[in-house]
Length: 304
Ligand SMILES: [Zn+2]
Image 1 (cartoon, rainbow, N blue to C red):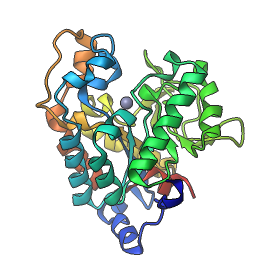
Image 2 (cartoon, rainbow, N blue to C red):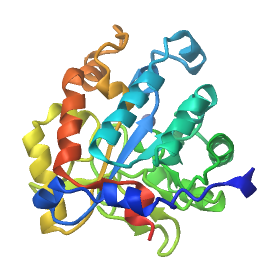
Image 3 (cartoon, protein in one colour):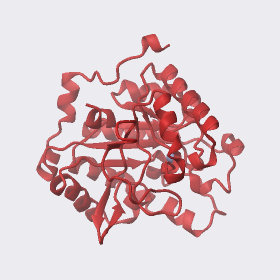
Image 4 (cartoon, protein in one colour):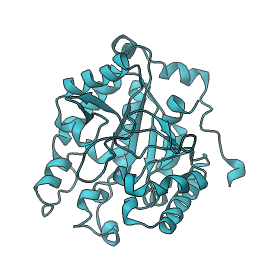
């Protein structure tokens, strides 16, 4: 299958022109940021893990395909190309969606097979997981998979062994570190901008933070994007682009634009707040974000 892999970097000059966008130049200079989507369904998030086991996943009504199609439309409306970090479990069940993602000009990347955080796996299991997922995504899409994002940003200080395995299994980059304090993830003192592990190894592309009050505040998306006022987000990203002169990395999930998803009742206050807050506002906020800044695929922004 690898013989027939398409080079996903071959975006035509016409497409490049489209992504060169206009309005955002005014707001953010000429920098292009990376927009990323973690393609998983609403019942697969880490916060629900204590309540929903993986062998129950098949019992939930799937909504990832319709939600991802809406994201493809939203990106198309704004002339934006992005990177879709996709679960192997989703790809296996939705091969036509995977082909629509790559046929629309987006980068396909790996989010592991079934959303197991790295610190819940040993090295052997992790190697099998990322190898299996990469091959599955390549077989379905015909594209080389270059990037990996760990479930719940689970490359932490205690799981840095995963970096060597990603490199050995032919990944070119990871976007799995969030340099913040958080109860589930994060390396607060990791570099805030792309760096190579072990001085020259795998490229790490951290989720974006802004320095405020002497600490890194998370401004790379997820629940924070739905909870903070949009104006704060925009100013923070402008600061990264204009004052620091660096591209940002932003992420969100298909279920975050789906206020009609089935609700889980027995999950505890914190998980409920993080998961359901402002779902009805997210799609319009995303539209605003896509219009206010320049965006591109991770490989086009960082692998040059
Ligand atoms: Zn995820």
